[in-house]
Length: 255
Image (cartoon, rainbow, N blue to C red):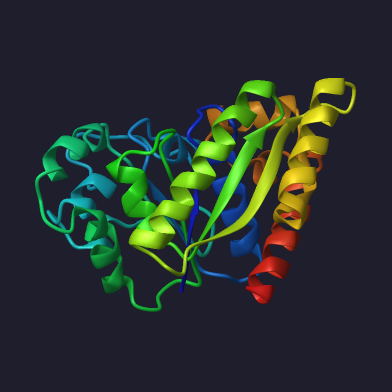
């Protein structure tokens, strides 16, 4: 079982869309995938058409040890694709865990009960480096970083890499950068090209060859509770995520 976090300290860069669509592509080739919605906003949960209900078991309950991880799993309509939904209560977990010993390892301990039930576990992280994200990174083997092709998105990338390296030194020696995904790319926009050039120059082959274009259909898909690969398979966004999934699998073999 391979655990991978999808993280960026900036919001609105395509973390959830990337998580959901890589998971969908993997499930289509007979890989069993679990997505953990670890963002209090719960976008991954709603993007799959799952209604949040009072009393619903969530990633928050798993993190604080209220329930076993297997009791929070929901089977989606997509074969071989399961999810642990989020809860707004996750926002309070930072305060609840701060004084506890080994608080950075709570999620890692909880996920050990999964055994080898899944080929991949993808964790959709919140847009901040708090104790929630640290828990995700501590239990992950690698990180995927979606990066929006805008200037301000670049500013936080260097800080994120410092954070990843700090967690590698202090908590998780196996943690590595799986890759950077350029999202919301516009070929008519010189800024997109400039950002791409800068990121590739600095990070080299850690940047995926596939870029995710700006696509109205990608933005529409969550409101219908479907990944873009199911909502509009022929769209440019869906085809880009298929190519990204191929690259992802190739890198996984190399790792």
